Picture 1 (tube, one colour):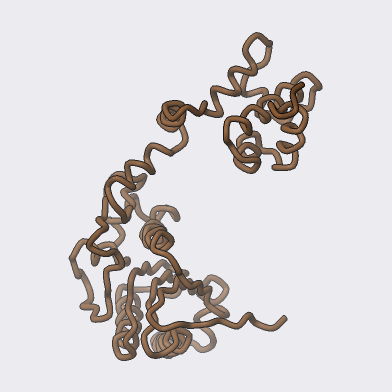
Picture 2: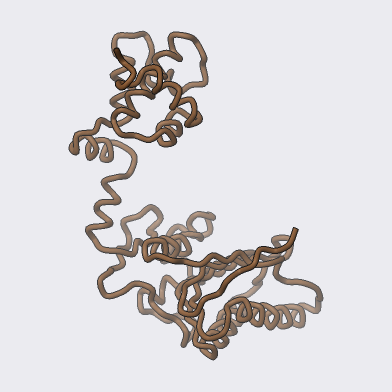
Length: 280
């Protein structure tokens, strides 16, 4: 199957993932990591590109890069070839160091850009390598804090504007959230759990948990029974009634299906049978 053609546009940000050949380590020492990021910084700066965020894991490299006058595929090809020569010479080996074609995705809106920065900084926590983003040395977290710990990066550029702020320490694992404080508070309110349910009900929409409880009231079943895989007739009827009520309350087919671990088509079928619009 032919490779998909990629379009690289000047002054656009790209999310890039590189991995070691057969998931073998890319770095064995601090010097290896410094060598890689300095090589990348040199080629970006030379060609007008920008380094927006990065994290150097053992077998993976996650990058946020802005293209300058030279297409980014040419940039990371030069960087990877140069680092592979260094890597093989240092360890007296030969062959490929990076596996295949890097994952590369263009970023076209600010919201996705902020999510990518947050995700990149959160990888060490997600992989269980570090308890918090700020504790992992080999990422751009400290550059966002204004601390250049181990390299002077000429191509580094903070990716949030003056209208944004970086709220830290509030997310699990100490991950970062880039945006306004009001946006952060809104995000917190919408999280699953009691706070989210109370927030929805305050706006006039019942939470899924409350709808499920209402359906079970007066029966011998509990919410846990509705969420089970049992197909008993009476239990299935109650489950479908709960699905229909959730849809009538404003929840989508897919969202309701995820709550019950069912497909959206089952929810659609339940709504056709028990929804308000189908009641005589």
